Image (cartoon, rainbow, N blue to C red):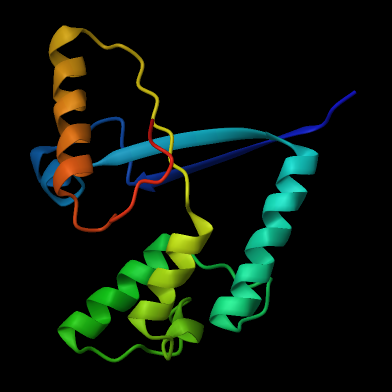
Length: 146
């Protein structure tokens, strides 16, 4: 019998009842889950731990969140100091190019699935995806899109 893990995470802030002000501050919310075989998860975990050690020279148990990288970027752009109480303080001396290399090495495949929500919404999603693919400035190479 196989063992599977389910990982679920969200980006943004969710509220069942949203005011116009809330929507202006928090326009996006996404929740996603992934199901993986336990053996595949172990391999992936080991690969990510190796990348943390080899590229970032940090302990493998340190978590590198996308929000940490974004917060570092904003702090550097705005030239604001990074206080010791920030959870990403341990990354403060890592250059942007090195952090980018870690992300590009760690994430080399993206598969996007959309449930059909009707012709109008489906068209909007297709156009948004096309814009990201053609004009996005944060991803420069799509090696696995077919």
